Structures are given as structure tokens and as C-alpha cells.
Image (cartoon, rainbow, N blue to C red; front, side):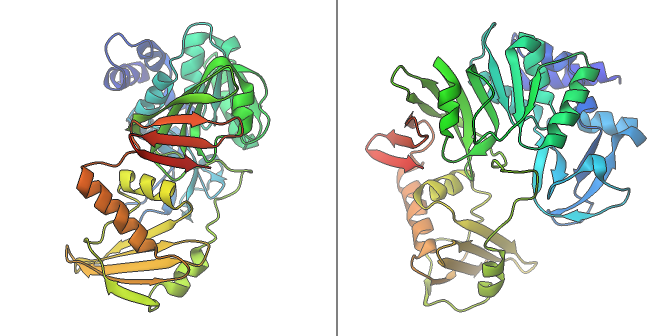
Length: 382
């Protein structure tokens, strides 16, 4: 199959019939935006990566480029373009070419119309900027990223396929290089940077994810300088914004090693079976809104024993462990009982059949604080 046939198949799978995004996906050679990427070696745990070189294997390149999957392009600040053959690297992804289906969904949430000036926030590989430029024309698209190599490489690849949007290296948390009718962010933030509302024209619309959650926020700017909208009944998870081109740093790695098997100050039996908080997107989102900044770890042994850890920089931590689906023994310490907070959320989920976040209304203050409510429930994301 040629890349055109691959792209047509991809477009048919990620866009509904009649969608204005079908032609941009069909005519954009995604593989050219990701000539090299990082992949998890067969049998290795997530977090260990080795490079793949599409230039050396065209069939693998085309197969990977047109699957509806994210391709990791940078790990711990090291771009796959700069990897050596056989190199293995450990760390968290720091940039990717987001799965095309999610790119299209985020752009559809933006309600983008002909003639709109759009900011594509987080250039990454340049693929989302390519789709926007195909639809709107170069003059209406600006794409920014904090990492100068990402913007340089994306601009070169966009040029190679005849597209020339404005591509700028700048920190998305700071001043933005223009004013826009739409801001669509392929990176997660918390809170909404004040510069985004400043850069939106009256009536302009922003789309983003809240960092460490799966919450997609859409909001339109109102005449008073606020933005009002909702948390979509949809979900996605993006990497959080960075202030530079380096790796994400966990400040709790040492704490985790210190408390991993340590007895807690408070030991009791938990109410519910151990669950991987990071894999339960709705639970993880509610936990982040309720008690921001908690990091989680999870292990499942060959014998079926499940163990989960919750940690916070204020010194609070919890460990829950049990065989299979039994109720766990829970160790907790520090100023807060993190597992109790988590179990209270799970109780609310079980009692009501859902959590109140998805579909909630939002208002965003000019300084980026998000007020959230649904029914009698209210929350603040700052």
C-alpha cells in the first residue's frame, strides 16, 4: 500500500462521514512527520525505550505512521532523531505525535470555522499544525512549542509537504505571539495560563486538558474577560507543560523508595479492593481535583498480589496491599490520610453510579482559576 492508501484508511477510521477533517487527514503524510520514534522493547516494562528508524524500514514506517496510536518522539528530553542504533533509554515521554483520532477530536471540540485564526499549542511533530493548515490555509495557523528542536524539525517537515504556518518557539505558560479566535492545546495545564485568555479574542474558544487528569475543558471567552463552558463528556490525557526542553522530574522518587515497604503510623483494613489509580481515569481525575499533586504507583505480582502507593510532597503517603480482590491492609502516614481520601471518592462513585466531573459546567477567571459545578457539587481547579 502507498501512503495515500494508508492515509485514506486512517481518515475513514478517525473521522465521521462528511467530516471537514477527513480530507486533511487523507492528504497529510503523517509518516513524514515521524521518521524516527521511541518504542518499548518486546517484553520490557513501560519506561524503557529503544529507537525505531522508519527510514530503514519503509513498511514498518508506514504501518506505524498510519495506526491510530501515539508515537513517542522524545523521552527524558532525548529526541528519537538523535538516538543511536540499539540505544536503550529509561524515563518518561516528553513529546509525541498524538494519535490522529484524538487530534481530530480535540480540533472538533474547537468548533473551528473557515477564516478563524487558530493557535496550535504544543507543536510536537507538527502533524496537528499540518491538519489545520490543510483546512484553513497557512496564514490562519500558528503553532508553538517550548522546545526549539521540536519547532525547528516540525517547520522543516511542514515545509517539505508544502505547508508554511507560523511556527514559534515559546513557553505556552507565558505571553503568546498573537491574538486568536481558537486555542487548541495538545498539552495539559493547571491552571489555565492567564495569557491564554488575554490572547483570545472576544467570543474566542479554548480547548485543553487539565494536567494529571483526563478532563477536556472547552470554554468561550465572554465580554467580562472570563471564559465559560464545560468539561466535555469525553476524555484524553496529555503530557503537562514544561518550562524547558528537558525531562520531567519527579520530586517524590526518593520519598517512594524510602516508604515503599515502611510501616505506617496508621494501619487498618481498607474498604475496597486495591485498584491502580493511574489506570482509572475518572477516579484519577477526581482525586487530582480533590487533592491536587498526589502521585501514584502500582504493582501486581505474579502471585496476584496488588499493591498501590499514593504520595504527596507534604509528606503524606499511603500503601495498600492485598491478594487479588480482597480488601487490603492500608498503611498511612503524614499530615493527611491519602487512601481515606481515595476511598471516599470510590464510595461516591459507587453510591451515585458516576462522579460529577464529566459534563460539569466551568467558568474560568481572567487569572486562570477554574470553577466547576454540577448539581449541588462544586469544585475549584487552581
